[in-house]
Amino acid sequence: MPATPSPCTFIASQRRLDTLLDALRPCPAIAVDTESNSLYAYHERVCLIQFSTPDEDFLVDTLAGLDLSPLGEVFANPAQQKVFHAAEQDIAGLKRDFGFHFANLFDTMWAARILGWPRVGLGDLLWEHFGVHTDKRYQRYDWGERPLRPEALAYACLDTHHLLALQEIQRKGLERTGRTEEAAEVFALLTQTPPAHSPFGPEAFWRVKGVHDLNGTEQAVLWEVYCWRDRVAQEQDRPPFKVLSNTALLALARSRPRSTAGLMTIRGISPYLARRYGASLLAAIAQGEKESPPEPPPCSSRPREAVMARHHALRAWRAQVAARRGVDTDVVISNATLWALAERAPQSLEEMEGIEGFGPWKRRTYGPDILRVLHGRRAAGGSPHRKR
Image 1 (cartoon, rainbow, N blue to C red):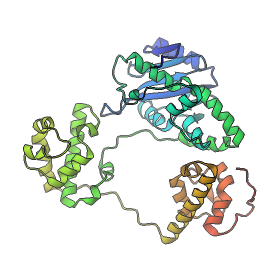
Image 2: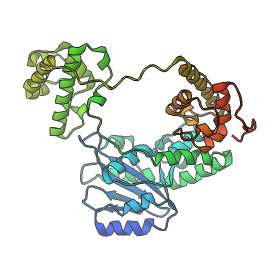
Image 3: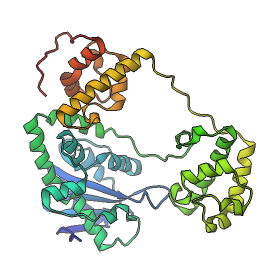
Image 4: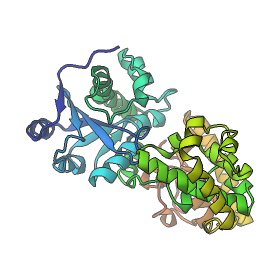
């Protein structure tokens, strides 16, 4: 077990938060991470925010009733770089819980992917570059418990303690390979990550794997037991999947048991759950048999053959580029952007502007080739000799 990097300051008072702000403000770059309780609560919350400067590590207890709004100035400051690893989930949670806005990010996971590093997990990177082991048990820790265990605090500190040094290694690698602007476009998109939201509701229901394999009555029963599970999860303050799995819900919808004994034949329904909730769960099944499922979301029509053909051609081109670079295909262009290009079929580099995820670097670097793939010609003014 690695020791907590020293010094590591735990912040659970407004006075100490002011000390943290004084330490952060003069730093051109700071490392940031968060820990949440998504595996242990119905409404996930950010429970801890970690900060590291070149000299100190800080852990902010977000459950201590502090006014955290001054941290918003730090996150939104374009003159100060915030270094995360796999920032998307952290940003989504911080926006949801505190309404923070973000500017000037560096994501060490994305930098590793852009550089084509074979392993991009933080634990792997810490070991490879700093000889530091992390305890993976704490990836599933209940960060909402108080007090936090010393070993958990040590793990949380390690998440940011080496990030600034790792960022410096990657920054030099991006400069050496001419990938700095490419990375900057990815980092800028990450700042626009929307706030996290609850997945419950008809839209999430229709995404349950297997729902479209059921008939109408079975779908209606599934909807009722899906809603029943959500109510129980709220009452118990637990994630819905810890009440009953989607697999068990589908089995209930198909078999529609009529008794507590019948409930216990369903894999995933314990005798305790059947005894405690059998009556209400059987009532939900019976109610579903009388009702209709919620309206499914509008089905998007199958793309036209011309769009499909362009998409297949672009995918083949992207695979070649990714293989040549030694990166995953979505590092070159995301799936959503690839579909947008196939659907819009822009005729020029100018017409590519405004396509999300296709910023100036990508347009300049890949745009002429994409126009050739789409239309069998080179863009007007496009140069065959582009800096990669």
